[in-house]
Image (cartoon, rainbow, N blue to C red; front, side, top):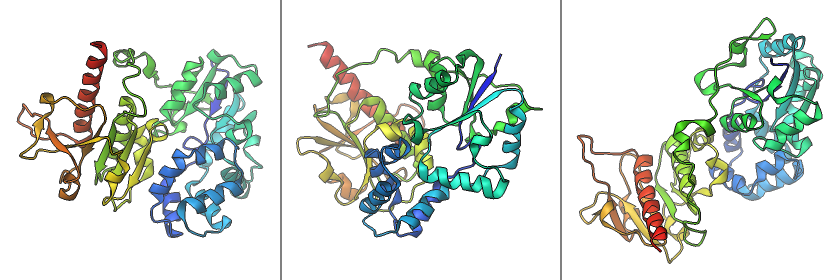
Length: 392
């Protein structure tokens, strides 16, 4: 029986839209916000802000340094808070109704800048003096120094309140956070906001209604096929590099990031001088690769300068000189290049590559999605490396 419910905040109780913050920063003159966000992510700027490791002032200073633009603290704060939308009254009423039947807790990855903003909004628009009035206890990452999906964050809430995991339901809109919660023994409800889910759909008259079953991906048969992780195929000195030339679709950018994470690429470079991608869509398809993989946008003219000189650059393109992928042995250090979804690798970029490979098409369809093509190539590279290691 469920006696306790731990809620996430953003996307579950509070509506948010990261794209609005990106647009606000662009209005301040940061036209390459996606590139700035990528570099800030790699430097753990946002994570450190959520953990309370850095102050608001240090965050503002870092944004100025990364953007190269002189912007006031106030302007940065306003732009950063643009992603915070509203507290739907129905969700606030839901919390009030549930409080009579369950112990309610809040566990949120957030930061002091956002905290001050949405707490003030709650007071002004709804007359509620802080989220603390709606829950037994609120746990904010910048206060406790722990973030989801770290198991310690869930255990901290459980231990602080003597909660039994099997009597506790955790609600979040991020699969990674849900998986981590399940790993510590609590029950979980995934709110898939991309498909129109709303936390209101799962409660009725102040009680839990019908919950959809959640499948922890750690225990699916498909995942079990990949449990034998192959270690030490390459280190940072010789790990492959993936390059995307003019990739236009955010889902494909995210897909390539995720793919690179499964292979263990050294880094992923997206060469494009017309960057206007929705980070939220990239993040969705990249999954946890978004923060764990070293990826960045680079200049279309000079992307090859980011490739070490001892690496062989191979283009996946059907040129007259291209060799079939299964007829070649990949060199130890290689950068794989894939191109624009419609036009392939631009001629200027193709000329910077050392050789070209093609993937044979046996059916009536003679094309692959760019992520599929990169996947075939990188896994053939990994297959060859595994074979070489096993035969030593």
